[in-house]
Length: 148
Image 1: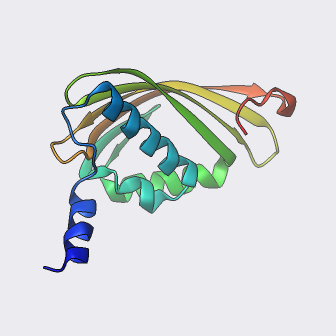
Image 2: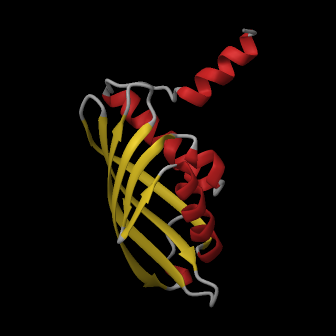
Image 3: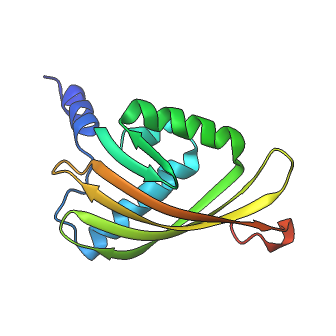
């Protein structure tokens, strides 16, 4: 196997940093997730999850990369000018908890800020196997935006 193929195989099947997490590697994982979500590229985001990843997102239950891509595609059609910020909350060997906020506009031009918490569980290859998100939205004025 060529060096390029080895690297490609690792990137498809592993997502460093790998558990067990340290404070530094947990924060690195969080920043990687924030960067991916801010790309608004559903395919890119889905690659950080196991093929059979389980999500609870508000009142929706999502399973697997195909459903993740479909969900995010629809989400970012509705949530215009999306900008996300994630912050470290806690971690254990293979779990990370974050708090986050993001801002977006709807099709009518109304701005919102969403607040929430996520609990993540990773497999041994650093892919997220479970993501449980609790989220609340608050209508805001454009002048009240915090995220650029």
